[in-house]
Length: 227
Image (cartoon, rainbow, N blue to C red; front, top):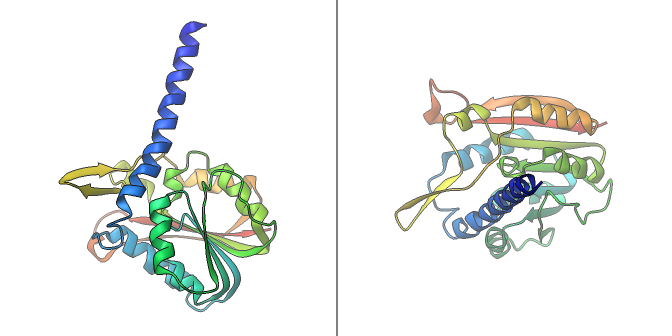
């Protein structure tokens, strides 16, 4: 019994350390994130803009908005935009950059229940963030609740193949290569979470950066619809 307790305590400490490391990692990265060379970040912006170039929305949630790289794009196409992120450093930068009256920010852990009205948004976008969330179903449940009927859920995520090849969110600080912890999510895990929460798959695609010729895809994207 004591051994089992110790094993459970060790797992709990490891889990807490991972969560704290993710938050601390992005807090530290926030000061240089926008200016660092990052072709995954840049490709994500391109595929998001291509996906929604000719669409308009009433209310959008940018879930895990970071420094707000996609906020201007959404703000130009929506009556209101809510950016959520659990990194105080990241969302602090986003607030400094964004002065539009139709944009609001919330420092929040998206794996916890959201302080957002049910059936209130017609688009929720999650970009390069779900790799840092252990339980996909926790996020999908909130997405399902907060979307209007017929609302869309867009995911742009690092392709699992890239993860297997060693690609992870990383940056350099004081000549040290720092990696932000991430969880393993297969493509099937996203599809299973969507089915569990009655979100219909509308589209799925893969994306390559110009530098990725002859290599596996860098990103995988999903577009789901609330049934």
